[in-house]
View 1 (tube, rainbow, N blue to C red):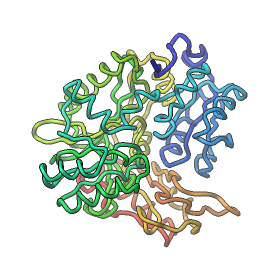
View 2: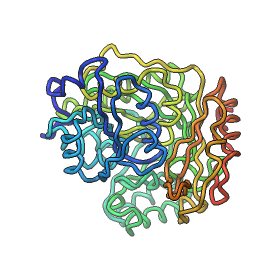
View 3: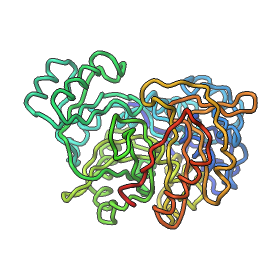
View 4: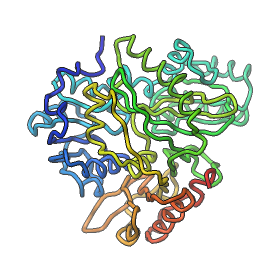
Length: 441
């Protein structure tokens, strides 16, 4: 049976000691990883931060490893040569591919779940089946591996309905279909290969009404520590319209997540999930991201992610007062019991600047200027997501390119501060939504 992590006693002593001085290797290169690197770089425990990224924002904080995030053997070798004490895995793909298992086999401590536990994100059907087993509130569903059976189920259920590619699809494999024709088109996209292997099977879910929010929890296989709530804006258009994206902005905390909703989520959703995985011999260690639908019946699980959200990570680190590094060490080493996390009361909000055309086709290589001016006020950070540096200039190199993040006394004030910073960035080839945080404001 696969083990999600080594036994805590086998984790290197330096990783388990409080106030240790540590070499940390951060896997990933997007906005989430820049945000994690920004927070980790503030830790007095940190000796040296390494990363796999070519992101110029992240490279301003870390040394480049010149190792690819999907080359597990090279990552293990790099850790041994450079005396890495903790590997922090940012994106979901290496987790689902079993990077943490390979590191564990080499005696290297890592933050993140092993392959089997990471199936919570790697397979929508895996999570829905676990919900059935553990009696976790979620949408009714069907799972299909061919178009004919999926269409027959769709004809029975009608619309609105939700179509999901079963596997990882970079946040783009979900269609909330308001008509049967839209649902059928989504099914054809999946089975025609638009999402590759991720769409080889699909989950069809009932449409749930309510308000979406996310709750993040640190786990060590036995204990859990709630972090903060957030709401993101997945749709590309203002008013939450248009196709889904990887996320166009976020804010924290989410007003809809009351203390009662938090406790219901922890008791009815997250605790039984962790208990079920532990009973299977695949305990969950890392951050668990629960996407929720909240209405008068309480919270229901939409989906799990096995890593920090992007762009939710950006607002979480802006609000976190505690040192992040010892929290990640405690999760990796099974020592979260009695750990608490301190937060700024002030909310934070982030706005994503994306390349024109995103989430469809877009051009790369346009010049971005004004970044220094955008951060000339307190509590504003511009995190790089899809950029590269060339001849001293910052160039766009992806779909989601920058996340402009601000903290202030209210969500409205954080929104104003973030957009003030956005307006100082000179990038005609990019766009952003102008209504991030509209539900809360």
